[in-house]
Length: 155
Ligand code: DQA
Image 1 (cartoon, protein in one colour):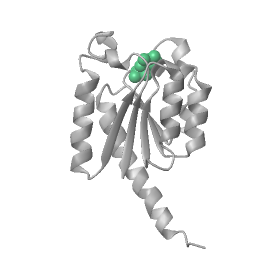
Image 2 (tube, rainbow, N blue to C red):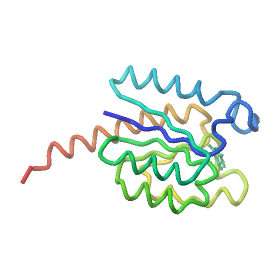
Image 3 (cartoon, rainbow, N blue to C red):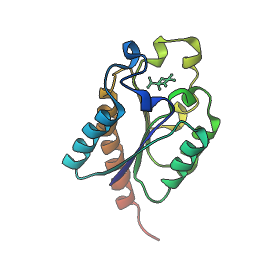
């Protein structure tokens, strides 16, 4: 099984940006923990971060036929990007959306969410631990998808 982790704009600034909202952990530290957990679960994992919407769309598209599950934090693009939403819908890969902060308890504009409806599930407000929860959830979803494929008779 292969997982792609896609991180949107300004998440490369974790550990520096608004620590009262996002905490002190750096993105590399979050990824190191995810890598360990993936290894313990016999799962391949790749990481991608970009500040550019089109690059995030390209990365989702590249997952088609190559990747079994996506964990995405589209960051600010969550609230605006129909393009990222359409890319997730297009590839049809089980996808879990993560937000470090609880976007429902913040500014009004963060309540708008373009991607949630095309994701298997959303994890918000757990801090960086949300990425761990997303991996646990995604492993379960991927196992269910795999089991369904094995049950479907080949014609
Ligand atoms: C975020 C929440 C977004 O509203 C914000 O623009 C981010 C990070 C989060 O992880 O809490 O950049 O996605």
